[in-house]
Length: 213
Length: 79
Image (cartoon, rainbow over all chains, first blue to last red; front, side, top):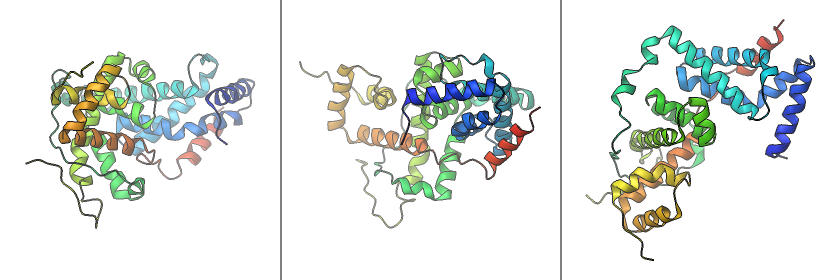
């Protein structure tokens, strides 16, 4: 049976108490449900699986040593993602400063309107599609091709399912700014994925075009 | 009250907020009226919704094999 939000919080509070009382095993239990979240956060910043894993480990160790400073007003998961995000940003700044201040980012102004490149009609995507590793790869590549500020907003909001408010706290930007970045990220992804999903990935099914020209 | 028509550009601007239900009921009404009449904007909406579902699935970023085990080991090594 799935636990409700408040049950999750209560059980996490218990685990935190145990860890602070010296039961180290309880910490793994506390972190385990969020492993994927931590990893995805790290990889959204650094893009490389090996670096992302190291950052995830560092972040978890940091969370452990700072657990007593965790305040229950925020969600434990958000706190953990925040630590991971900061850790990843710090690493990127240290090892690849040229990526940190991405030229791509500066060129993509958030002003002005976004014009879709393509109006292809998508059939609903079967979730089985993601069983295929080449499709997961294509989606990952498309996410990785976004500029860092768009990618981070998309990963926190659409992969981690954080709220707009939580995303704005973690990224240190305003809520309207989160919405703008998210909007661009989603529409850019749609433009990049449409040609693949547009029939080519769904073999043997006739594809209906909705273009009027 | 009659629905005020809006342009495609105005619709695209709000598509993401529409999916997140971050728009006023009035704007929602205007957009829905527009989608009924405009195949292009409907296609952009469906595609964007698909993208959100696809990336939100959780299987996109698979953790490397052995990730949990290695993390657990790190934790055990703590002083």
